[in-house]
Structures are given as structure tokens and as C-alpha cells.
Amino acid sequence: MAEQSIKPFFLWKHLNKLRWLSLSIVFMMLIYLPYAHLYQTYEAAHAYDLLADSEKQVYDVMESLTSSFVDDPEEDLDAIKGNTWSGTFFGLQLSDPLAAVGQIFAGLTLYTPFLLTALIPVIFTLIFGRFFCGWICPATFIYELNTNFSAWLRRAGLKTGNRRFDRRVKYLVLGTGLVLSSLTGSVLVAGVYPPAIVGREIYYAIALGGFGAGSVFFVGTLLFDLLVARRGFCRYLCPGGALYSLLGRFRIFRIQRIVENCNDCAKCNAICEFGLNPLHDDFGQECNNCTACIAICPTDALTFKVKISDAPDMGPGHLGRQYLRDKEESIERAA
Amino acid sequence: MRRRRFLQKLLYGGGILISSTLPYALSRFIAPEAKADPLSHLRPPGALKDDNAFVNACIGCGLCGEVCPPKCIEFYQRDGGSNVNTPYINPEVKACILCNKCMEVCPTASLQETPLKEIDMGISQIDRLGCYPWVDRGICGACVSICPLGDRAISYNMWNQYRPVVQDGCVGCGLCVEVCPHPSLPIRIVERAQGTVTQHRI
Image (cartoon, rainbow over all chains, first blue to last red; front, side, top):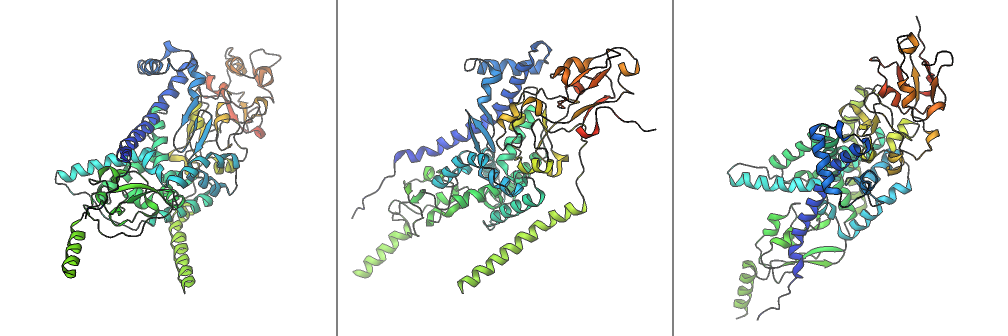
């Protein structure tokens, strides 16, 4: 009685690599853009001879990098500017939804042209859920490396934190941040939102010559992730993650388990950065479609489905030990 | 019964929310934030006139700083209070060249696109007890020769050709402050109401 096995589309397996590529491109851009700006300022000053040696190095490297693409660096390099908090991409302005919401709360006004810049991210979030957290967020790049680092530490015999808290705390952080934003009249959530901090601090460090206060906070979150809870800030505290989770609650693209292929090995639960429970079909609104669980699944039991709700718990996987034992028992009982 | 439980949860949530905002609000009441020196912290050109409105609208994305050709726009960091991550220009270090790029790029229009003549970052004020030509310590004219607006912003006093006099057309870009060779900077950018000549009281 061989059950027909449903194989998921083979490319889903490799999406995780594509995700790492996307994350590293975003991070590289955040490092490249401040240097591009420095190069532009040197170019605008028309004073190569007056530059210091280190500045001349920056100028030469950036010139060799960009001269084949742009004619007039002073103007043409303005095409891509900014960071993931808000930026322009060839005339298209994009902003984080949290920036839009934060600004609404800070000023208690609606400025439509700015809100429209958050429209494309919001639409993508409605379709793909919390994809920003897994695919774009520059802080995720560092946090996931931090997770790997803590795995090394654990292999070396040191203890790293793996506590669990209530995931709803981050909605409280979002609410508190927005209330405080409207009380003080400035977008305070930006101060506790890692992608905004990382983008800004890299710019401060490279172009303005020194890290700001946000980097201290960011190092604090790294230590929190390392010592208290794995990926703890994103799971339990991030206000932007809370907003994306709310928007992505009824996302259309979902990861789902193929119960016929599953052998209950629970690798998906171990790999899941957000502490979800793919083994028991419990993804919820927190899943960021990062596809790490699809990539690690040894029996191709996870796939993408176009649905707006998770499947109910489908029980133990059909290749699993428990399932076989149950089956044998039922056969024995029948005999 | 379900509605009652829902209301109960809502009440708990609201209570937790309010109590979690309390410490911050209290700390703000006990320790009001320190104001930055207005002479060396100008808002970028085209900024909303009301500074509170500007801070409300600005999301701190840093785009204005990232397109600025002379890299004059800096950002409030540790000393900022609720101004944190909002831009300012320190004309003593690096002054605005009125290129309009920051106004064009600002996504929230907290820097509004303004024609050159209507920009109002302040107005230059000359301390006639400090300025070299005004106290007959040589000829200078650096501020007049750097001014991007020419005659309508700053010109020489009629009777002594090297004594600078600020006119009403000055928009307060601060280039004159940047080039002023006097160590005590007798030319500063102040609010328009304070006038173009420093008043000394004895």
C-alpha cells in the first residue's frame, strides 16, 4: 500500500540560498551607499589634490567601481539612495510601513504622498506575510550570523540562552512606541527598530565618522539574542515585526506541511528562527516565509501553498515512527 | 460571556500599555530635555517653520544627509532628546550651498521644495565690535565674496567699502559663517526677528 508521494516544486528547496543572496545584497548596498555619497562629495568639491590619502583611496576605488556605469557621478549616483527605513530607487520612493504608521501617530496628521511610499511594501506584506524580516531586513543578516555564532559557542560547550517568552510582547512594544510617539511628537519607534538603526548607524559610521547611540542599543539586542533567547528581539520585542505580523496575518503564500512525506524529525522546529512549530502545522501570523524549514527538510515534506489560513494540525507524519506504530496497532486490532 | 472576556482582555491590554508608557513620560517630566545651541544647529533649507511640526513630520531616514553634496547635514544623536535622528546644519563646520537636493529627496515633505529667494533658515547677524573691517583691523570681505545670493543678501557699507552689511534678502545659508576668518565668528545665523546687527548693552 504505497501512498503516492507529492513532491514540492524543486526550486522551493533553493529559496533559502536566494534569501541569503538578497540579505547580503541589501547589506552590501548599505555599506556601498555611504561611500558613494563620500565619493559624490569629493567629486562636487573638485579638489582631488586637497584630499587626504585615505580619502584619495576612497575616491579611486569608488571611481573605478562606478565609472563604467555613470557619466556624471554627482547627479547619476543619486538614483539609489537611503536605506530600508526610507529610500529612493530610480525615482521610486519606498518607505517602511512602520515609518508611515509612526509618522501618523507622531504628527496625528495624514500626509498622503508619504503614506503612498509605504504602499508597495504593504501590498507585498499582504501577499507574502512578514517577508521583510527574512528577506530584506539588514538586521536579520547580523542576527542570523549571531544565531550561527551561538551555535558554535554551544558546540564548544558554552551555554547560550534559549528561553521562551510570550510572543505578544512585541505588540505591546509597538503600541507603547506609537503612544509615546504621539506623546513626544517624534517618531520614537525608529529608535528601537533594528533595520532603521543598522541602516542609519552604518551611514553615520562611514560618512559622518562615528557610531551613534543606536549602535549601543543594537549591540544590546545582539547580547540579548546570544545570552537570553535565541533570536529573541525579533521574536518577542521588534515593533516592526509586530506590524508586519499583523499585516501578514491573512497572507496568501504560506508554507505548509505535506503530512504524507513528513517523518516527524522536527528539524524544521529546530531551524525555525522565529520559534514556530511547523511540525504541528502551527505557523500563525509570525511566519516570515524565510524557507529555512523547506531547505532543511530531509523528506521534502514542506511546500508553499496559496491559501489564506493554515491547515489544522494534521497529526504525526506518515513516514514517522508514531504513525507507523499506530497503524500496526490498528492492523493488529483489526486482525 | 465572550464579549465580557474580550472587554476584560482589552482592559488588561490597555492597562499594561499605559503603565509601560508611564516611566518614560515621568522621566520626561522630571528631566526636561536640554536645548541645543540654536546658533550652530540650523534646520536644513525648506524645513517647516514650526520646529515641532518639523519633528513630527521627520521620520529620521537620513536621506537629506545622504544626498547633500557638501555633506553639511548632520543628525542629532545622543544629545537630541525628541529631536533624535532629525537633521541639522552646523554652519561653523560646513554650510549649506542651497542646492535644493535635500528638499527634492525628502519623502515626508518636512523639507518642502522652496524657491531660492523664499528659503528661510534665519538671517546673518554681524557683530560690529568683532568684525575686522568694522573695527579697522584690515580689509576682509570674505563673507561678501562667498555669498551665493550677491547684493541682495550682503553688501559693503557705502562709506567704507570693506565693512559688510546684511540685507533683507539673506536666507541664512551660513556660508559667511563658514568662511569668516575671525576666531570668535562675529557673523552668526540668528532668527529673522533678531535683526542683522548685534545689539550690545553696556
